[in-house]
Image (cartoon, rainbow, N blue to C red; front, side, top):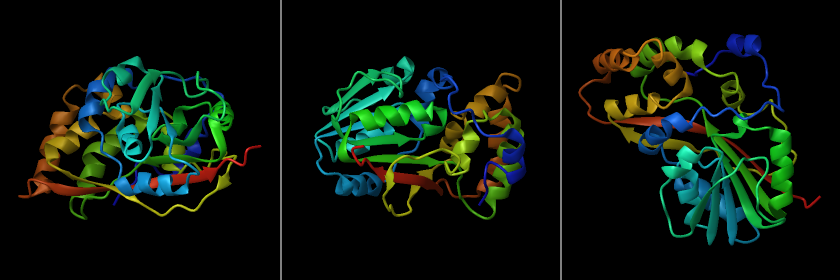
Length: 267
């Protein structure tokens, strides 16, 4: 098991300024996101659906290519899925009851009190959170539920994890935007102005070949930054990891989820 950050790195980097503007790190990697980003467990959306007062409408904010929107669509009559990146929306997976649109997290065209649930997956650390939470309170119905979820580290095996740390994580460390550390710290440094709701621990479990794992690594913001000066980085990482990967074509990759859930009091 390894983490992508250290306490020292977090302490020296500092917290993100809450009112910082949106920076688009994702449009250029929209195709890679669609192909390589892992899917969230079905239990995540089932639990959310059990908590809401009704299952009519849900908002998936910063949907990317729709990874969370598709899960929500199996439990809600209609899902509004938004993203600030037009390129991400252009590569989103269609579904009959999902409507995609390009909108910022902090200001949408949705009517007041129009959603039973709001979901933010792998994105809160990029937002102006105070403005976003004000928008959530505006569009969420009384007793509606907001779910914030993210993942920031992986577990593969005791033999492979140290090699992944050495060949991938360490070289990438200087290239991560400071916002990522908010996620890696479990969002504990960001406010959450809702009545907290207990939510069980969960993880994303994927069954990947080495090529799929490297493809996923290629979608990371830090990787794309490093590739600008070291275009052969992923090939070298693949060769290094192949020696530790072993004879198994497919390995189980576990990514524990950071989950924060709350209910809107209506105030």
